[in-house]
Length: 145
Image (cartoon, one colour):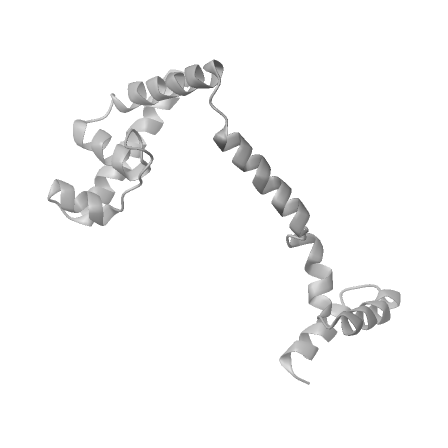
C-alpha cells in the first residue's frame, strides 16, 4: 500500500462503517482522496463567481470617497495613537512608528531597515520595540482602570 492509500484507509476507520464504502466510492469517482472529501468543508470552496463578486465589492469600497464620519473617525484614531505613543521615549516612539507603519503611509519597516536608520543593531531595535510595547501595554492598563 502506498502512503496515499494508507492514509485513506486510516481515515475510513474514523467514520461510521456504513459511510466508509460511500466515501471510498465517491473519492474514486471524483479522482480525489477520502481526506479531500472529509476536509472540503474546512477548505475554501467559493466559486469563481463568489470570488469575483467579493473582489468587485472591495474595489467599490476602495474607490468610493470617504464619508465625513469616516474621516472624523480616522482622525480620532490617529489622535489616540499619537497620545498613547507620546508616553514612550522618543526612540521607542520612532521605532514603533516605523515598525508598524504609523504615520508614514502605512509602510512597515524591518528590524534591519530601522537598525540601519538609527545606527544600531537589529537586536537593539528588537529590544527597544519590546520595551515600547510593554510601555504601551502598561499605559493602556492604567487608562482602562
